[in-house]
Image (cartoon, rainbow, N blue to C red; front, top):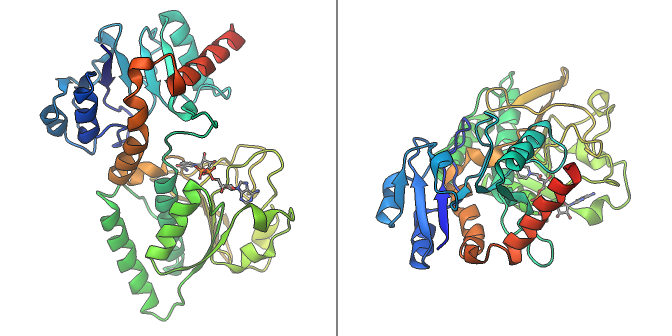
Amino acid sequence: MTHLWLRAEQRPNEDRTGLTPDGAARLIAQGIRLTVEDSGNRILPTAAYRAAGAEIAPAGSWPGAPRDAIIFGLKELPEDGSPLPHRHIMFGHAFKGQPAGRLLLERFRTGGGRLYDLEYLLDEDSRRVAAFGYWAGYAGAAVALKCWLAQRAGGQCGPISAYPDKAALLADLHAELARELSKGTPPPSAIVIGALGRVGSGASSLCAAMGIKVTKWDKAETASGGPFPEIARHDVFLNCILAMPGTPVLVPADLPGQPRQLSVIGDIACDPSSDFSPIKVYDRTTSWSDPALRVHATPPLDVTAIDNLPSLLPLESSQDYAAQLLPSLLSLDAIDAGVWGRAGAIFDHHMRERA
Ligand SMILES: NC(=O)c1ccc[n+]([C@@H]2O[C@H](COP(=O)([O-])OP(=O)(O)OC[C@H]3O[C@@H](n4cnc5c(N)ncnc54)[C@H](O)[C@@H]3O)[C@@H](O)[C@H]2O)c1
């Protein structure tokens, strides 16, 4: 019998989960044994998992789980160097040479466990079966708009924190925007690039919900390779493309000093250290405590580039992601086949490469 163990997330500001109580009930009905760790910050209450029939364990008790349990969480494990003998389902960030990822793989090697990386759960057409992109786009557009509003008040965006749900985020933004527009300020215009993708759809939806005029571009509109003076004619640019070799430069390094209407770049794709990043005016991510990086003083140009945006909307992010992932979890009895088999093979490949 497959035994799935949902661990409590230990990262600060991480209230999301990849399994809802409804999903838990489905897994249990299918004969999967389910243990759920209690968690003080998970957006969905432990009591609902208990009511669904899950066994409840203390937070962080997964190292003592039976050896055949499959440990499931989203983000990183405590970095204590301990060997990892279990099978783990999580975002490992371990296959692109990241320093913390190398250590994680070493822990699997010494423990004999296996990583089924959520980023590499792919269907037969190599498309991801589950991703958080839509709500990242939604939240990222909201933060960019907050940056624009803060500029209108002569400042920079202050600390942000998670919203209980999307309605609370919209109420907050609507109130702020209405205050600004009541002074006679024209509403901002926005351009979303990568608009046909998951992140771009979410960013476009937030703009629509706020009544903001949005220009939507995807590959067809950037096929010329640039330059793209249209970007600087919008107030807010929301970058939502998956950058790769050949991605054109969308914001050149000299743009801040040029005449422009653009005052906020929301780099929702958020890959500033990549050589392929299409935005050349900044080099580091920003954070919840300090969301905006001022890259030019007068007129102001702020970049916001936060790498854990879906956590700002943990309820919707969890519900959406869990719904996408559940069909794969329901097939966990066949962990050597299909989506799990492919993810396992990717792990094996990286372990062999590092041997
Ligand atoms: N900041 C965060 O918290 C966060 C969260 C999730 C995803 N992301 C990142 O956002 C990016 C997009 O993710 P996604 O899930 O939406 O990917 P996706 O594949 O669903 O969408 C990417 C879109 O970009 C378009 N695109 C690619 N190259 C382009 C180009 N040169 N010009 C115009 N459009 C182009 C594609 O056609 C596609 O529509 C990724 O880099 C991802 O890692 C960031």
